[in-house]
Structures are given as structure tokens and as C-alpha cells.
Image 1 (cartoon, helix red, strand yellow):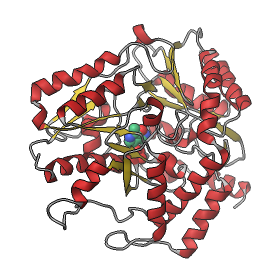
Image 2 (cartoon, protein in one colour):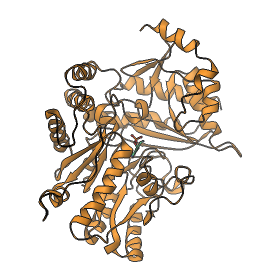
Image 3 (cartoon, protein in one colour):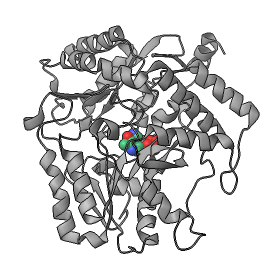
Length: 448
Ligand code: PMP
């Protein structure tokens, strides 16, 4: 397929042709008036149907950490499709699924040793919540059913995920959600944390709110706490210093499982294989997705501790099994993509590279400070968020316009949620590309 073919095809798309695809998390009417179409991708760039290069400032949706269309990953997927297109993992398995699970367990902090595969972050989260509940159930603590999430948390779109999640718009249309869920307060305070690089100094004490929730409900009713070590979707909010360690201590004290949702943070975004490694705090369950295959084939899942796994494997009844799983659990194409992706990460030292360029990235991001539209900037690892002052009476309108103009007129892809711009380039980004990305954004924001 040539660029000319892409162009011909996209030009042939009339407004009617755009009707059938109901796009996720998108104001469909606005999009379809002026669509942003992407026809191909290579390394750091997307290409429009007419061949215009657009720098990928967001690694797709925080997932293409190795860059786009990387040859070893492409080849592995192609080979796998020809060799074994599908194999069930209910009562059968293909060998590479075990290999990938072993590699992921080796990559995760010591103590997280067993992998359950799903197909997305949302499925990973629901899997984590279900394993937490089932663990307590099979160990004789069936009264522990309550789940604790956090305000401004994003844990995908399953009913479990939106219930523990803390984003009002994602919850409000969907009825009662899961019962028995409580939320910790979020940890962002603009006055106390403005223009922070890395983990904020202020806010670690907010972990103690968990003690208040425990006192309210009694520990014997609480199954698990789930947090993102760095909340990405709600604007790059890293946990304040000491926060995760304190959560760990309180969970240990009360027999509560700690779940880290590492769908964004695993695979190098913060300069380490996992955020747990960066912060030196090991959860009982960790979710992953996105970067595991560098976005090429859908995959997600959880990595759990021996203690949790053993509760099922060595329990009183040899037949204890987890009544959970997906047709596409450990799909051969995803597994092949995952193995090849991990090899690219290792071979190119991409996690270390992200760590090495973190300071440069932060400095480039902070160069936007002082622009009249900029209200705050937060940076950690190779992730940055720029909060804009919303337009009077029209929250989100400015952010949307910035994203549109960035794509159509400035050749960069940025992600916006309301009036917050997020940047998270592929980890192969060069320092000169980091500079170009932020200089372009500076020019663009200067237009407002
Ligand atoms: N958890 C977190 C922390 C996420 O950031 C996301 C996606 N951005 C999800 C879960 C959901 O992942 P998915 O869209 O693959 O279902």
C-alpha cells in the first residue's frame, strides 16, 4: 500500500463514511468535521494519508515505548501469525506463553513471580481486583470484600475499574457500580506542588487517610487498595515522596493487599522497568499492559506474589482454580510481540536511556513556564503534563484546540484531557527531538 493509496482512500471518505465507527473517548461530531487521520508510522513519527510526518509526542496512547514499526517486533508478529495463529490457554497452552511469563516475572521486583495474562489495561485491572477478592476468599477471609481506590485514579473502563477509579465523568452514567468501594483523596495540590519535577515533597502524609478508612470500615472488611504510582491519564501526578511506602506499611499492618496499576508506568516510562522499582516499594499485585508489546498487539495482565499464587496452588483443595480468563489470554501474536519487545528494550537499554534523559526532558518541559496560558507543569521520567488556564465558561475547549492545531498545523501529536496536555514520547526519543517537541509546543501555546 503506497502513500498515494492511503491518500486516495482518505480523500474518498465522505462525512457519511465516518458515521459507522463510534470512536472512544472522542467528541465524535467535532472529530468528524475535521478528522485527524493517521495512515502509517515509523520510529518517532506518524504519517498522515498525504505523507505529512507528525512527531509522536505521546507514544500513541502511552504504549509505543519502543517506537513504531520496529523491525524485530514486526517480524516476530509476522512469523507467529504464520506458525501458530491461535491456541487456547484454557487447559492447553503454547510454550512461549510460559517464556514470556518468566521474563516478566524476572523483570518485576523480587517477590512478584506469577503472571496472569489479559488483553488490555482494563482487563488487567479487573483481573487484579478479582484475584484480590478470590485470594481472601480461599484463605478463609471471605469478609474482606471492600476495595479502596483513589480520587483522580484511572483504572480503565471495566465496571471494577470505573468503580475504584476516581474520574466523575467516567462513572456518572453507569448506575450504582460495584458496592463496597471507598476512595483515598488524590494527592495534587497546585499551591503546594506547582511546577514540580519528580515526586512532590508535599503530600506523603495523605497515605494516612487509609488509616481513617480502615477505622471507618474495619480492616476485616477490606480486600485491597489500588493506586497508580504515577497517575498518567489524570495529568501526570506522581505519588508524593514517602506516600507509597506509607501505603505499603498500612496495608501490611491490616492484612490488606496493595495493588499498583502500572499500565502506564511499567516498561520504562519512569526510567525503570517498573515504578515499583523506582520507588523501592513492592505491591502484592501489579497490573501491566501497553508497553508490554509496545502497543503492537493488545495485551495486559497482572503479576502477583508467591503468597497469592500459592493460596490457589497449595490450598486445601487441589482443584482450586481461578474461575477467570479470556479467550485471548496469552494470545500467540501478543506473546510473540511481547518477547520481541522485551528484547528491544533490553538490547537498546531503553529504560536506562529514559533515566538518562529525564533531566533534559524536564528542563525542556519547564521552558514553557511563564507562558500566559500555562498554569502548571509536572514532569517525571519521560512523562510531562502542562495544565492550561481553562477558557472562561468553556472547560476543555482550549485543550482541544491546542491538540487540533498541534496535529494539523505544527506536526506534533499531543494528548489532552480537558485542559491538560500530556507528553510521553517513545523512549527512543533523541535529545534533539525532545527539544523540537517542546519548542514547537511553546510556539503553539504562544499563539494563545
Ligand atoms: N490503568 C491505567 C493506569 C491506565 O492508564 C489505563 C489506560 N490509559 C488503563 C488502566 C486501561 O487500559 P486499557 O485502555 O488498555 O484498557
